[in-house]
Length: 200
Image 1 (cartoon, rainbow, N blue to C red):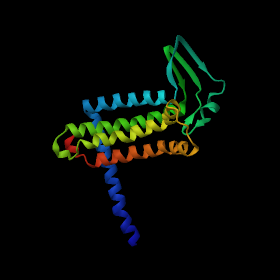
Image 2: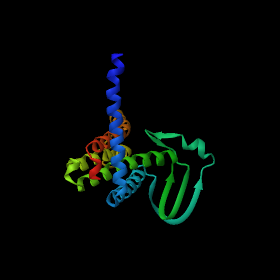
Image 3: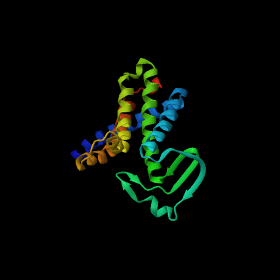
Image 4: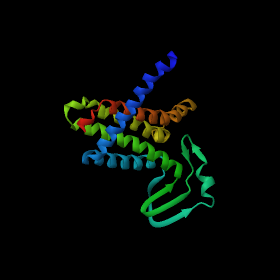
């Protein structure tokens, strides 16, 4: 009986935190500045994430659409930690894009979290002082996004600078992406908790 009584306040606090965050994100996306920050930062993140995976690049000028023979089976084949095979090649002018549905889905999810974090932070920072959100929250919201971006292209960076990646270092990179996703959710909840709905 006492256990149920103790759990109820915790569940109430979690529910209130989620509701506050939903109100904060909804309020941020209804404002022009929040919407602009969300769209620009999300789009930029998707492009950088895709380029970091080497699925987006530049090549000879041309137009092409190539699809593998068994795209469904190929799409779920992993090629690395949180990376999967591409199923199509799209060439439009000098731009070459390798389409990997699971990579796109993961990148879009991370981009959405990054965009929401920055949108809520910017709107709260520009809003009245009643929101009680310092300018440091904007910087804090961007850190998990940088971490997730570093996780996707970290091994490539090591190769470029000539550092031999040991098994231990590569294992660390495997865990950076899920840790970054958790950090993005946590930062969004933290920022949402500190925003007064009236300030949006």
